[in-house]
Length: 217
Ligand code: DC
Image (tube, rainbow, N blue to C red):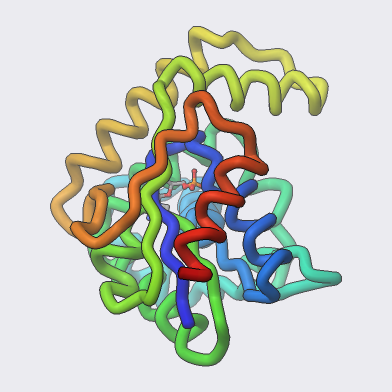
């Protein structure tokens, strides 16, 4: 069985997917981390983020591997653990840009489908219910107001000791929302058969509980 969770940046997808996966014993796959790894590679190689030909070339010599250590997902880029590096602020915008390149998407989607074939998996991303796994048994689309999403991200970064401005985070999310919904291939969109949950005024527990209800049904 596969569960698809899509939605815009900062809607709480990964926190919720992790909790849900632990609760029902599924493997959790954060597909955004894969695009982030490719973006990091292009950045490290000084490749412009919209250079499709160079991206295609570099992808042939790039390995993106997802591994689990004590239930935690680790992302290996060419054998190196980049799980922390891909969370850097600049990587978020870069991932949004490179994910619009069809050659990047098609390679990542292939890896995601392969992971979903072999196990009970919860995948979170932007196009899981519409493109990666259109036949997923359960689909969810999580949203929240942009103010709430920016506030959550701000609090998360402050808790890690980072200095950031709420205004800059809101703008970052707005730009990513625009890019992710306006790309040509597999844009961010709610699948027709997905259950939409507006998490603006909900706690993580409430969201998980409501998703459990749909899963058990
Ligand atoms: O979920 P995230 O913030 O880690 O994702 C980073 C970027 O990757 C996001 O802005 C768009 C892209 N992405 C995508 O296009 N498709 C996915 N399934 C997951 C992420």
